[in-house]
Length: 189
Picture 1 (cartoon, rainbow, N blue to C red):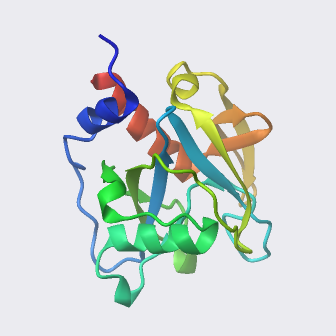
Picture 2 (picture 1 turned 135 degrees about the vertical axis):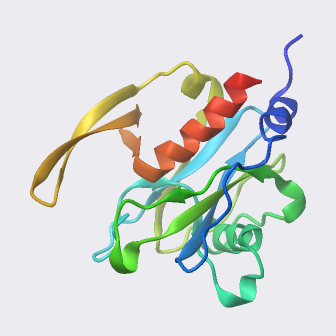
């Protein structure tokens, strides 16, 4: 029997994140939103000078603020601010392992991904940080479509990195690690 996406995701996320969030570092959270057709919603960050993630494919989210109380609240707040989607804690199916940024200094951050199930239309106002939103079918991701690598020129070096090319958009880095964590859990179930 083929399970529906919501049930598959519940099962995949039944085992909570294996890692806790470290203390004493900048913390952030993102929302990985999935709809009933099994589409994962993502965004392309706007091109902005000084933004280390400028133009990257990722998920709505951002740094924890003192008033948030917890990182799930951060994910909901940031998603509303960036793409206008009102998420609630009840929409959250679970969380994935935290992902550390590869850079240090002011941009260093540890991000907790939360997976949300949203059956209502995803209509909202994009803020200045977001160039566009789009979705990709989880079946396409599970099939490995678009998998490859690319060369990144970084700090005077060339680094070969894994990626997924999605209709002219490149998913790589921290966001790819989050997607791979989700896909690995779905495949295990």
